[in-house]
Image (cartoon, rainbow over all chains, first blue to last red; front, side, top):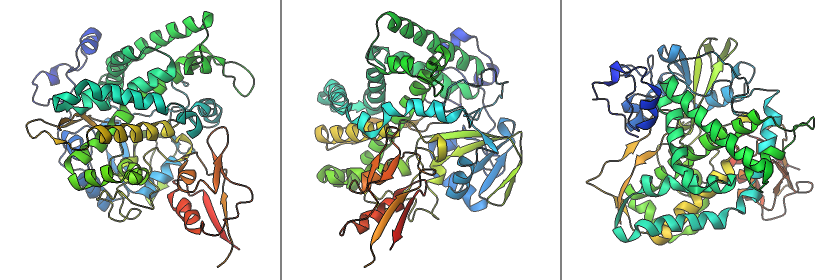
Amino acid sequence: MTVRLSNPERNQLKKPPKEAVMSEDTSPLPQHPPVTDWINDFDHTDPKWTENPFPIWDEMRNASPVVHTDRFLGCYMPTTYEAVRAIANDTEHFSSRRVLVRDERPEIKNANAAPPITSDPPVHKPAKQLLLPPFTPAAVEKLEPRMRAICNELIDEFITEGRCDAAARYTKHVPVRTIAHMLGIPEKDGDLFIKWIHAILELGIKNESALLQAVDEMTEYFAAEIEKRRTHPTDDLISYLMNAKLPNGAPLEDAHVTGSLRLLLIAGIDTTWSAIGASLWHLAKTPEDRKRLAADPSLMPTAIEELLRAYSPVTMAREVMKETVVSGCPVKPGNMVLLSFPTANRDPAVFPDAEKVVLDRKENRHAAFGLGIHRCVGSNLARMEMTVAIEEWLKRIPEFRLDPDGEVTWSQGTVRGPRQLPMLF
Amino acid sequence: MPQLKVHVDPDKCQGHARCKAVAPELFEFDAYGNAHEIGDGVVPSGLEDKAYLARANCPEFAIEVIEE
């Protein structure tokens, strides 16, 4: 989605009616003042950040390992790999109960909103362990044939046209169809998923009612799917969760099942869409890398890791619970933390030539999937989707470039990736 | 050349699965996708570089390469 800052209506519509929010993809958002001081007044929703965040992160990192803004009711941001890692591993001082940095900080009504991503120890571990088995490398490998078929079905739809918006017609649909396949729900329901995710991850930063309505709609949708499976059990991920047992032998409450499903959908789609899109964007604008990868598929494993490092899509959040010190900087409760794994991955202290994409980078302990106990549960799936989507694209469309008459646009906020990616081939 | 052994610290491993991608001869996963060294972790001759590469790619700094 593109944020149109020129829209004069944006300042006046702070709380649009629910219907208006959900029915239009370009709902106005309240505008934040433009950032002029990235060190003391940063804002990850600023259009400059959305467009090209890398020089901003370098500027912040050169100033301090932890910076602060008064926006979002007070928020820190670690700018080095070391500081990001320290916070990700410190569940005593930093809570995951809020995982988005937003304008508002409403009271937490449901402590188990989306386990395990919003859970802290000791609740976190059993909730995470429930989700891990369907996402191991071995489990994910079984999905590969369907994934390759999905990619080719999508390419079939536009390959003869010689051009396409790769974000709208390809990168978006790969994760949507894959996750629908895993959950055992119709692939055609993907448009609904995309609408909800947009409302939660983008509109939701500044618009509480858009977020709540999307959450309600998702909960209702999954409640119906759970109901169906009570009488007609299936062998998909929804049935897996319904049959899963907690360590004490108790089955999951329906709210836990729907919470986990919401999480899988929110976390699994926008993110992978962004990673595949950013990778294709890089290859489209960097002919030497495109040619090299198309000619030598054995580069794929290191190339995928490097594209994940250089264009990591996901930024998370923590809430400061107790006063502490991070990389020499005092950190106080009452503030949020913008936990930018993408910024850590651009830290030259850990990654030589951090600003360059090096397709055969050998040593790459990037943090694209997070660090510590909240490591992305779907990381193996995401890697497989990226690998398959790029391999199949390169096989069918080895020659491609950005359309000079089109405009590449990037999503705003928590997940960064191309939302409009016009290509010629 | 000293004999090498690899060891995954189970308290640090978070299941990023990078070690097995880099050195499938040296690491395997449990049912949750968390890694451990195969057998006693002894690195067969010729795989020394892979052992160090696995260590360098672990985002959790969970892998130790021991020179005996």
